[in-house]
Length: 288
Ligand SMILES: O=C(O)CNC(=O)[C@H](CS)NC(=O)CCC(=O)C(=O)O
Image (cartoon, rainbow, N blue to C red; front, side, top):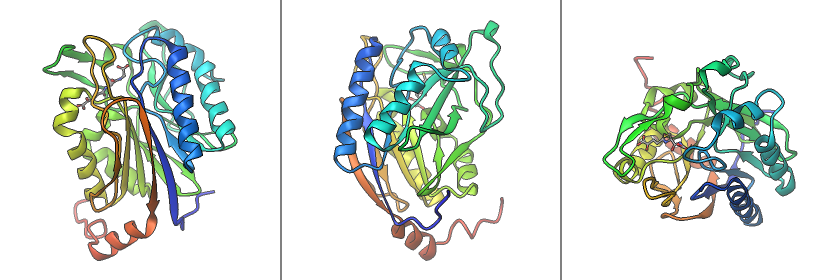
């Protein structure tokens, strides 16, 4: 399946301001997936926790999605098939074992779930899953203040990519962006593109989002794309948005500001080959 000599990939990124109503979130996601597909996107990415953002009953949702899958995995599969796109489903709660990484089924007593990114091909078949490894436990100078993701979520165990007609595509979620060793492992799996569903806070996003995406793209000489939450979800919760696509030279190919929307952008693989040939930093490594 892995086609190592891809030439072009047209990506669609969906930016959302997910709120309390699951139905509204799913309707908003479908509208943007459809718009991306109509604009020629072959692969569409949703943001982190596009369906259930900032609370709600993550444990019940995660249990429903375990093993055979529930309504959220059903939704993602049917969207991929209906619009005939590869679909990277942001993240959803899931307690089930991960057959791709070997992460075990979660013990229900502990009331935690994985933050799982499921991937579907254009027929709606599941082709990958990554569970967020780095959990955001941090103090931010904003109205929310304290973020303790690990109260609700359990960490995944390793980086994960999925094979596609465009080669191995790496998956990372939000806070993972701050860990360069995570991305280096994806590059060692042959990834030339890393997709990052995210929900950076307004405060940390304004300071670091663009910088981190560019740093990871430049040091790994690969394409980076971030699909973000971007707006005011409640009085206390604001996210930065600015979904974008960065090329292996660190150039921004396309970007959004805040608010619901989407962008569509074509990646030219030759750009990556030219950068890696002219400045062979990946082959000049001495400490791996
Ligand atoms: O809570 C939800 O429902 C959705 N998940 C998130 O918003 C996650 C966990 S709190 N946010 C981040 O990882 C932000 C990282 C970040 O902002 C940084 O690294 O600066």
